[in-house]
Amino acid sequence: MRRFLVDNQLPAALARWIEARGGAATHVLDLQLAQARDEIIWERAARDGAALVSKDEDFARLTLLRPEPVAVVSPRIFRRGLPVTCYECLVVPEVNPRS
Image: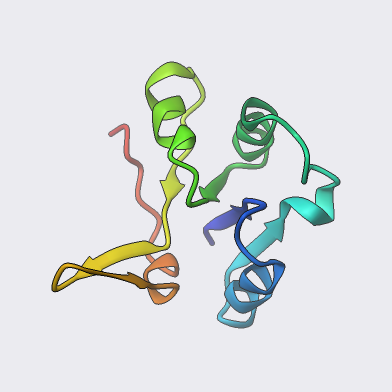
């Protein structure tokens, strides 16, 4: 089962929503990481084997800079040029982005 770590700028309810659909999710508030630097959150996701759910573009940059393989999922998608929040896209089969 895919694990998710939900970043601070997304609601804690998203972690509960993922869990209600059979996923495993934790919000950074539950880990007392709400004020943590991005690198600390990244390291926690790596340690827990979790995909990081965030709207923060800095995490996309960290995928290039950090040695730990952490998947980053952004719940924003675009449809017909308009931004649409999409949480259904989070519950996907496990994918190894580095294979």
